[in-house]
Image: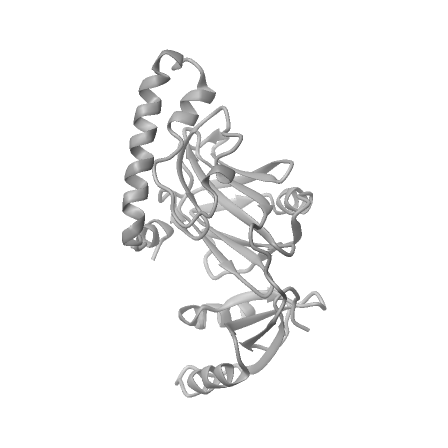
Length: 283
């Protein structure tokens, strides 16, 4: 299923519909009031600011400092969006604690972002970005730009079994929240990082995990095998990687999950139950 298809199947909570309608109505009223200032691209972007808002704890924080170019399509924390395409190149720019992810084809900026997904995982606190239809990614610049953000702990790319897709992981420092905004004309993605309103206390989390290994096809195969079980790749303290499922509150729950996975016909890679603190990486 493509990122676009995942986006079309996202379930919107019932109580959210009223919020969206009110936000859209406010946007329409504001747009009429500001019509005489249509020549200002900054104000036009602000008037178009809310088309849909999903799962964002602070819309005001997410929409602060609206860029002077482009119209916002959505603000989210997890989910999908963009348009299905191919042959896209990806590069990045940064400003303070904001990362802009730009897309081009044949040197020209695209009007919309390619199909993408954003996922959030804990232990450690991290974001997983996947872009489909992408053939070129400046990995060195990506890592340099993201590492320059003061709220970022680490950045690494994943190997996935699709040569037209790229995936990278951004580990956040403790008690850091975020918003992801999608823009069009031109199309780009903006990641904003800011202090979380609610401080989480570190606690032990239980997983079913693979053996530690280097990034590569073997790791990607295991990750894909258990994708339906919520698997993700996590960097260890030793600088290697594991595939982990769970994020559970007790060892008994993790053991139950391991029993379920090991009983399947496709089970081959030896998995084990492990735990680490929610603000740390596994050994």
